[in-house]
Each structure stands twice: as structure tokens, then as C-alpha cells.
Length: 139
Image (cartoon, rainbow, N blue to C red; front, side, top):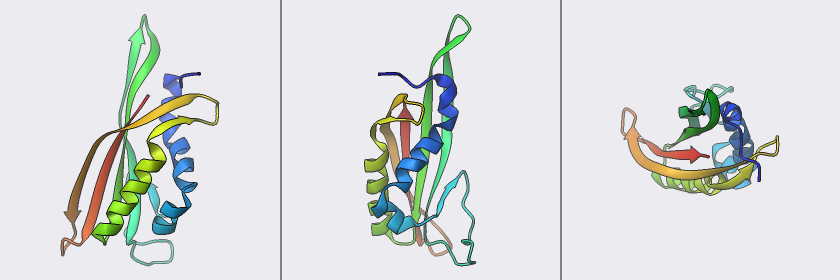
């Protein structure tokens, strides 16, 4: 089992995006509305976005031994957004089931994703936008 090198951790979000896009049930709910860092208010057709996923790298701290990076602590947060509370829960469960566990990247390195924090929130002018916030540790 090869452990993913620290320098590959920057691109891990791309590998996880491939996993997410392979989940037909989740993509059936969110469509193409998966965005790094920030989401637009409207989709490419000018329609309001009712469901989306936003993701961002929260923490990447390299661990050094004699000026060499031997590992790193990495956390990635996903914010699942829906105008329906029940749908936001379903999307969060599907996302968790997709990401959590042992995976292999395109270079053949293994990495483990573990849910380390989750939260929920509501926002919007009418408090009608529900957010499920999931943070994963990647090792």
C-alpha cells in the first residue's frame, strides 16, 4: 500500500470530485452544481441554483523531518446547500457515503477520508436555504 505523498495533497480535491461525479444518485440531485470555494447565484442558463455543493481545502499542514515533508494534515470541507431541508440531509448522507473510506488516486496512491466534523445551518432572506457542512480529514 503506497501512501499518498504530501505534494499530491493539493490535487486530492480533483480525485474526490471524480468520486462525487460517479455517484449517480447524488448527481441526480445536484446536477453539475459542484463548485470549488464559491458558487454562482445562477446556473449557466440563468436559473436560480436550488441545490449545490461547495468544497474547499480548509487545512494543509506539512509535517517535516530534517527538512523533508514526510506527511501532511489535510482537511477538506464540503457545504451541501438545498432549499429543502430533507434534500440537504439526503445529499449530505450520499456525499458522506461517497467520500468516507479508503480510496486510490490516479497515480496509485492510497488515501483515507474520515468525517471529523459536521454541522448544519440555515440562511437566506426567508431562512429557506439549508446547509449541511461536512469536514473530512485526508491521510
